[in-house]
Length: 136
Image 1 (cartoon, one colour):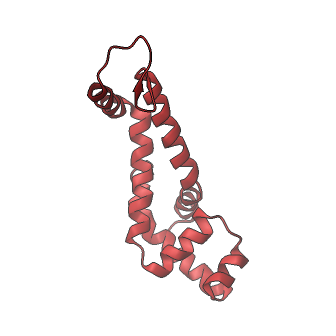
Image 2 (cartoon, rainbow, N blue to C red):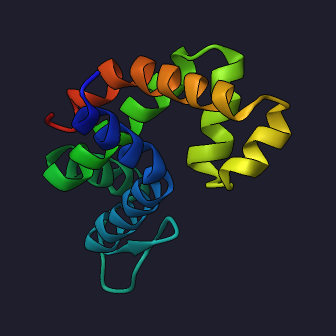
């Protein structure tokens, strides 16, 4: 795997929590456009509760930013779920929890060299799931 692609996939894995936060903020923004909050209709609105849910779904489907964020988050989840358990643990600790390399090595009870081998293997296995949705 080329170094630039390796670094790009790593960067995306490190940014997983930021992407999920952006997605939830975008969802809140979409809900605010529906003239409702927390499932209740705001004063001055004549929408029925079912139409509020339908409206939110329709706005989510039409919102390109929401769709892109959702696709990216799903791609990372699929990549993570496709990994064997030992690599999932490494990805979870190192990329998602952003623990220091030494802490991950100690937690997994592996050598530094083995850490780098497993890290490379995890990123290479995640790459096919991630590179497409991120336009690389």
